[in-house]
Amino acid sequence: MKFKTLVRPLLVATAAVGATAVAQPAAKPSPEGVATAAQNVIIDRALLTAFKALPSRFEDAKNPITAEKVELGRMLYFDTRLSKNQDLSCNSCHDLNTFGVDNKPTSTGHKKQLGGRNSPTVYNAGGHTTQFWDGRAANLEEQAKGPILNPVEMAMPSADHVVATIKSIPGYVTAFQKSFPGEADPVTYDNLAKAIGAFERQLVTPSRFDKFLGGDDKALTQVEKAGLKTFLDQGCQTCHYGPALGGSLQKLGLVVPYQAKDQGRFDLTKKESDRMVFRVPTLRNVAKTGPWFHDGSITELQTAVKLMAQHQLGKQLTDTDAKQILAFLDSLTGELPKGYIAKPKLPPSGPKTPKPDPT
Ligand code: HEC
Ligand code: HEC
Image (cartoon, rainbow, N blue to C red; front, side, top):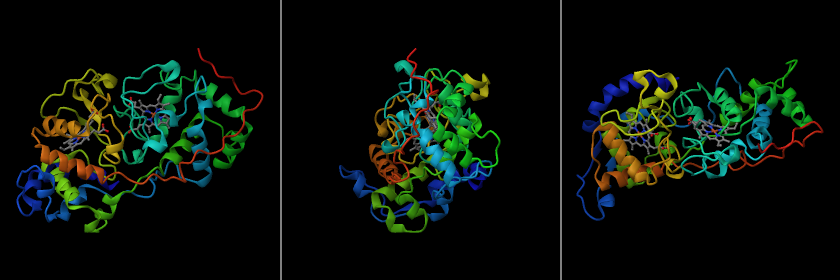
């Protein structure tokens, strides 16, 4: 993967960032500062190699995407029978019509229990090099096995119970056979995760920024370009890089310590070097995926941007700078693939399908 190898050169390149991006004429702060500063912004295209246009799908040789798998994965994504009380599906917390999130600080799971972290978007998550806020799953397939068995999320008692439930639904048995041809016993928990993963790998939302990356200078407005320039000048791309503008593990509070109850990856590994290390969220559609940060504690995107400059880079952003960055972030809002995400017809339960269990 090309963007992985970018990490090191980028950190070196940042020092030179301020010198190479040019804006003319110099910004003069004023009430209309955002617009004034945005005249004739020229972006040094060499700096844009930090980013990458979104592919049409995030491939992984270990789980080739086929039409059959995607169709099955889509059904499973929407099926509440994968939860103990049959009232929650993946879509409950990652609503595909609302940019793959629930817009709550933290999500409500089985028996209305609240989880401790904000639900990240599933759109473009295939572009992350690791999944979950603490990076505890390597890829989407591994990730998908988590929430179904998590007692505060879908709360199924065991993988075997999930498999038995699927096997009790004749339409699913056929769909698994078609998706995993030649396998003697295709209905497995691993294959369920592969089908969901294949579906998610095509949840991509290209935006005007991709056109701009492709060479169309007019795809972004002057204010958005001014915001992109500020983003690059500040060095945000040292962590928010690649096709998703995020996806690696980094320390929250790198320059100025950040106070939070959740210690990120440290809570998982107990290694001191992992304290406050979080998976950098994608900035694709970030204007639509609030509230922000791992605990959903930030309710204004402008606050998130200012906190980032302060804690990650040791800089204070002016309101004008922050507003310009917000304009740039807006250009990362993409199109939802309406047809692809339409809720499919789910196969009817069989006589042995378990009933909802509210306990
Ligand atoms: C009850 C709400 C809830 C349900 C149901 C749920 N999720 Fe999540 N999901 C979350 C939360 C919260 C996180 C972050 C947890 C963490 O990082 O510790 C998450 C993380 C993820 C991630 C990682 C994204 C990233 O950027 O790291 C993916 C992908 C994902 N969920 C997909 C799914 C799929 C697929 C299903 C169904 C099998 C599902 N989720 C069901 C709430 C939910
Ligand atoms: C050293 C790495 C690093 C740098 C530099 C950095 N970020 Fe972040 N960014 C992160 C991490 C880690 C998080 C997750 C914070 C959390 O969840 O609590 C994050 C979160 C965010 C969020 C919230 C996204 C969400 O979905 O919750 C925004 C917006 C953001 N960054 C924008 C920026 C901007 C703008 C800059 C430059 C001013 C910047 N970041 C610089 C690592 C970085």
